[in-house]
Image (cartoon, rainbow, N blue to C red; front, side):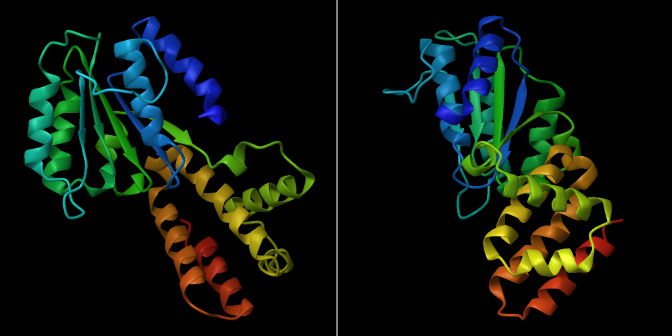
Amino acid sequence: MISYENLKKNFKRLADNRTLFHAYLFFGEPQVAKFSFALALTNYLENKKFTKPSKVLNELSIISPIEQTIGIDQVRTLKDFLYKKPFFSEYRTAIIKEAECLTPEAQNAMLKTLEEPPAHGLIILISSFPENLFPPILSRVQKIYFPRLSQIKPISAKNTEIEKIAFQFLKGSLEQHQFFKLINDGQNLDQFFEILIAELKKDLIKNSGFLKKILRCLTTIKQINVNKKLQLEALCLCQQTKK
């Protein structure tokens, strides 16, 4: 987690001052250390070591999808765990992996817990697709974005140009010839989408609809062998249907 040193310092300070929020959403692309960071934070709360725990943590409960879903019974069990008083830490921590797999009933149950959070409970939702969570849940958690390593490397002139194009796209002012130039380089296209998705995810409540369209567009481009003109048309369609 070398790349998340600033985030680590901030969370250590919050933990030391006992000012952690009751619920967080750690979101970002797959395999960007969201779960590892949550484990290290929990270990710090219990053992004052911001590293991967070397033994089972007493004040931690983790739930994961079962057959790609997280059901209401799992959330109820988690709620019972959170409302018990901790002995080895200031907090009892619940980590929900792949939170986008919460069923509608489970999300409603989670929402009730977020509305009446336990005094010593800390909830960490982890998701690569947070746009699938109910807006009321998103409004009751503090959202922490975990970027890809490539996004937090020193900015090159090329990356700056791609970033400029991405922001022009969001404003609806990107010219077609810029699209063609972008599509001619597959790596540029990947970086463009990374920047675009990261920017939209900064405000999930406002941008959830447009973000879903962008993700569907990206999936089409990646999975279907279309020519450059059709790729351009797909991107332009996303732009035109932003509203």
